[in-house]
Every structure is written in C-alpha cells, then in structure tokens.
Amino acid sequence: MSGKSIHKIMEEIRDILKKEKELSIRQISIKIGSQWITIEKSLISMKNLGLVKERLGKDNKRKTRLFSLNK
Image (tube, rainbow, N blue to C red; front, top):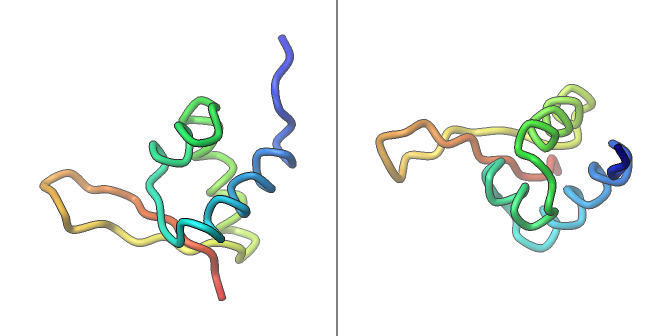
C-alpha cells in the first residue's frame, strides 16, 4: 500500500492554504486527493506546531472546522 508521505501532505496543505486562505478539512482533502482522516491528522499536527489555526464556521447548522495559516 503506497501513498503520499505525511510530510508531502503537510507541504501541499501549506501551499493550498497560501492560495485559498481558509478551507475545511473536506475541501482540503478533495483538492489534495487524500482521505479526510489523513488530512485531519496532518492539520492537527500542524496546529500543534503552530503552523495553522482553526475556527468554527457559522454558515450552517453543522460545526464546520475551518483552517488557515498562522501569520
């Protein structure tokens, strides 16, 4: 079973968030082409390292987790 390394996924997330500013886990997973659980784990690691920040969206009744780069 081969796939992208976690480091490659983190780099792709960083590049996408530079362009798009703020996206949900699902939006990022679609753009990268990886499973959402892998993206979520990568974002949590990036958040712990202080690279991204998270907020809850208010557009709908569901809690949408939105991520953006930390400045």
